[in-house]
Length: 105
Image 1 (cartoon, one colour):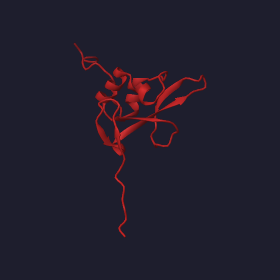
Image 2: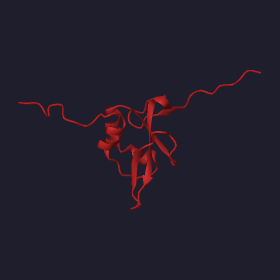
Image 3: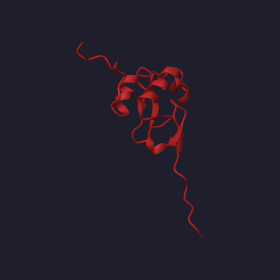
Image 4: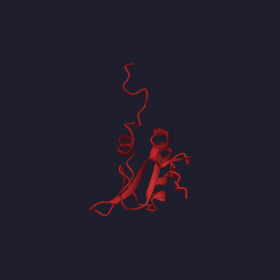
């Protein structure tokens, strides 16, 4: 009797809608604070309770997800608060910056 191995989990990016191995993506969940407001946070270990939303470690995917407002739909919580700067920092230090800002003119 041969051992049966399962395929690694595959998830869909909420930004670009492309499928990828879960190990190569970042999981986000909605966490309720003391004021009962849900905030999107990175689930680094993949163990936080609740529904997850998956995203590539890419600034373009994060921008698409924020612009399309897909976090609320993916997490099934339309009132979720998304702070793109915090999420960009958490997925690899990418930030939404103007490439011309900071240059001497």
